Length: 99
Image (cartoon, rainbow, N blue to C red; front, side, top):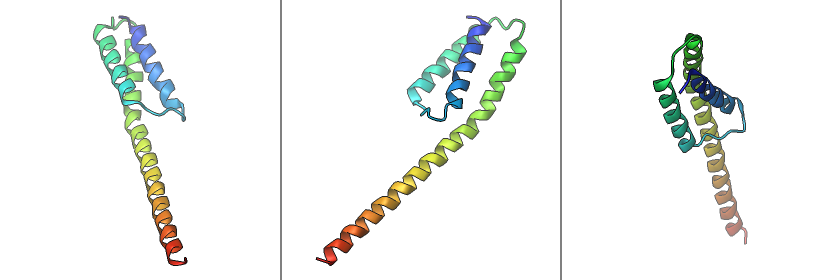
């Protein structure tokens, strides 16, 4: 593979992360990671490699922040669903007492 393949895979993940509507799929991420590791393993590491490496490291540093944002969002949805379920149970209980 070439250095360009490494760069292409970095761009693919950067584009996905930039899309607010993207919902991460563990299988897709695993496939991307495997492809990325293969590409890095067979890269020529020619001119411009330092720039590619820097971009990969910047992406790697960004990922924990993105993952934390996904976790917070999922937790917020979980809390809202719990609150709705609690409210629905209260309404059902209230309705049975007023009949």
